[in-house]
Every structure is written in C-alpha cells, then in structure tokens.
Amino acid sequence: MNKYSTARSLIAVLSIIGWITVAAGILFALVLYQSSGLRLSIPVIISLGLGGLALVAIAQMATAQLDTAENTAEMVALLKQSLARPDPAKAPQPATTPPRREPPVKAPPVPGDVVEMRHGKDIVRIENGYRAEGKDFATIGGARVWIDAQALRSGK
Image 1 (tube, rainbow, N blue to C red):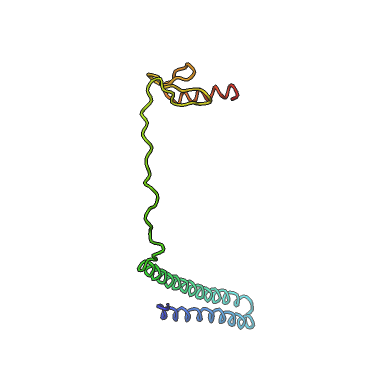
Image 2 (spheres, rainbow, N blue to C red):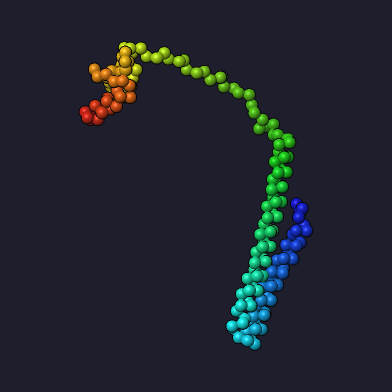
C-alpha cells in the first residue's frame, strides 16, 4: 500500500534538507573557525546543526505517522475480509451438555433444626434466634463467633 506517495516524497525532501543543513552548519563552522576563531563558529554549528537535526526528526515522525495510517488501513481490510467469509470450522456448535438444573430450594429452618455444625458443636434454630451449647444468640453469626472463641480457648 502506498496511498501517501506525495506526502512521502515531501518528507524525503524535508529529510534531505535537514541533512544538508547539518552539513552546511559544520562547513560554515569550520570556515568561521579558521577566520574568526571558536567564538563565532560554536553558535553557527549549534543553530544550524540542531535546526537540521530537528528537520530530520520531524521527517521521521511524519514517516512513522504515515506507516501507522497504512498499517491501520491494512488491518481494517483484513478484518473486513475475515468477517465477510467466516470459517466453518469455527462456527458455533450446538450444545451437547444437558441443561443445568438448579438445586432444590431448602425450606427455612424451623425451631429445633440443627442449621450448622461448627467445631463439633451444633447450632440449633430456636424461636428467637440460635442456640449453641445451651447459650442463646440473636444471630447465627454470634453463635459461630462464640463457638470459634471456645475452640480457640480449648486449643481445638
């Protein structure tokens, strides 16, 4: 793909001008050094040399931008091509696994039901909460914490 031939030509000219500017800066600096000394040659080589290098850098950045534009256009063309004719080997296959069945919903515990065993101790549902080892709790979390604390104290 070479859609940007005019831009590439102008960029090449800009790059050549940049390198010519760098070379001219070196030549002028040498001539000035021989006639006027170091004091006049340093500003010339710095200004012309840096200016020429800036032109070359700008030309290279513009080339990179054009390359990116061309590569993006090529990627879009490839994507359109792959979407236009799908691969039959990659087509979705019908499901062979049976449909998933949800587990049956358990009824909420009623007073007297053991709802959990923790560290070998039963947590039993009572009328207004839970009971563990003869101690009543408003929540199951409270019963769990108490049983865990008892287990830590006893070293189990």
